[in-house]
Image (cartoon, rainbow, N blue to C red):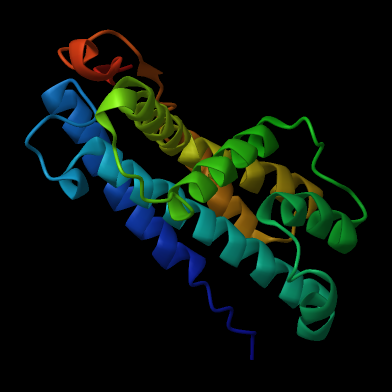
Length: 209
């Protein structure tokens, strides 16, 4: 009987996919990532947070599963578990196949930005906004939201490129080919142009292409 592989990373990708679609629809409809009066959880900025976090969880889940299947759970617990997500994607393929994803690979570059956006989001600290530092503080918040939105827009490009490269290193890894299919997703980007919030906090997201 063939082995059954438990693939929870697909469930996380489904969550990210649903949020990504709502993120793009919001920007198309509103022409901005977050409009005054809208609940954050229903804005593009809110959906972008979900995309970033769940895509990162999915990539972490997948590469750990790949390592466990090929290197053994005991080895992973001792040598792989403590690695960061970016390091795992560089080291684990080399341990399994003897070949590495290049450090300058576009997928690795996007992964670094995804991890940065994930960390910025989950470790974001509460702050008391002070009137005498209002512009500085709101600008910092806007910059954070922009980083997260940029990473969310490229999240599936990241998944697809990493999957495609791993599949080339390990042709027998069918799940990597599944990840590689995400390269067929639209390659979204965003345009930063002035909107009505410029007079208040230094600018915002007003469109995409």
